[in-house]
Length: 319
Image (tube, rainbow, N blue to C red; front, side, top):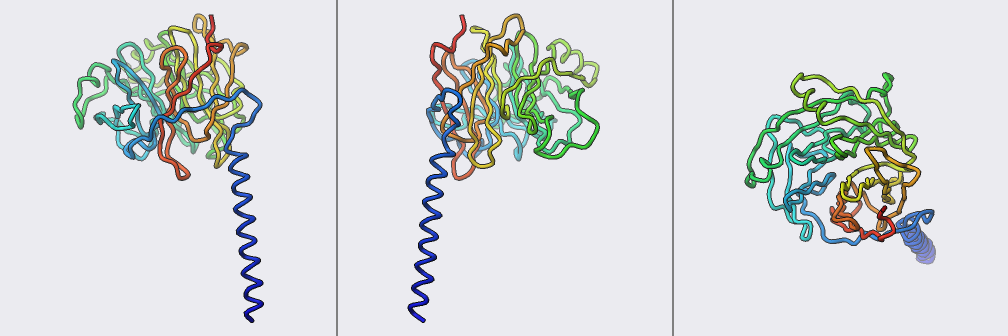
């Protein structure tokens, strides 16, 4: 009996050893991005406090860095220290709903909170919450402020048929302001492309006054080969950066596209892609000068929410 037991134990131990070896090899292989594009390293700066462990958006003005959780939180904006990950202050937006806040886009004087996430495919309209930047800067920690306005928009090309969660092309997590237009990009779970929608800021203001819903149609489809989670425009270099990751369930391989913009025209023929490492659910991006990007990743799979920096080669700047 003892001999039989020892035999079983050896088989179990051998199985566990093989499982461990496979796990290590799998981690080494799948945790690195696919090598079909140049790879840039994300320099991890710090971990974020648990209060913003689902950081999905970034904005910066007057030297302040702001973020928000995508869901599971109230209608709150958080000023953070990007070097330490600490929350400096929390400001609540009165009389608005936080269903799925996925992006922060900013003009000179206004911050647009994009309640646009649609993983399940059940939303007919999305919300743009307009906040005055000066009011936000002057608010104290724990204070409640009011939005300037809220506006609803719909993707006019969305089919009437019911969509299947995580298997449709009408999700949305990325937005940025480009020369007095709000650019919104779709997150396509099915075809891994992204459609660009444009709204004039004047039309957004008029829609708020009229309490009307903005119907937007795509102006361009981009072959991004992944799921777009964030966007930011650098007005000085006239470059748009898109952040995304692949459709892997566990090891999400992140990437960026850098695209030149000329007179509000996106030139996809000159777009450049870089894969990023390490893997993770990197959800937000912000230009820091002309050759550096600030990113945040949500917590997940044993890792805390993180802040990272990507240094770009001077070759990525367009003359």
